[in-house]
Image 1: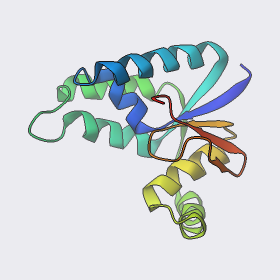
Image 2: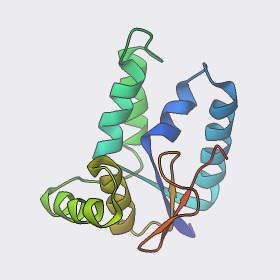
Image 3: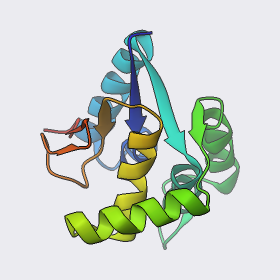
Image 4: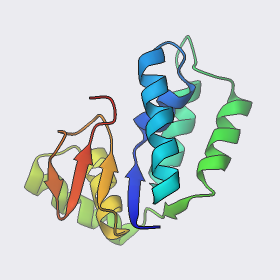
Length: 139
């Protein structure tokens, strides 16, 4: 494997979201491509958010059982543990870059795990954080 790629919650969620077929196809295609050439990385935050995203609201994307299975599948990847030093580092990033703490935790997780790319639609495409380039797979 040549590189590490951090995958944010929204990319995983679109894999299951048939309400937006265009983004679903784009997410599946990009993840398939990245699995062939890169090591995929997530964090415990992504795993938690994925379960909530897939099961919340009046019209959940999928059942709790399928969401749990999705989280179990994602947990087989490289997983960054959110711990106290990471939270404190993310607070610094949040303050320096004017990001929400949640976005800063994603950025910091990607940075500390040695990723070169962060796949997300939540940050600006092309933006670079400490050597990690943000790519929006839905552009």
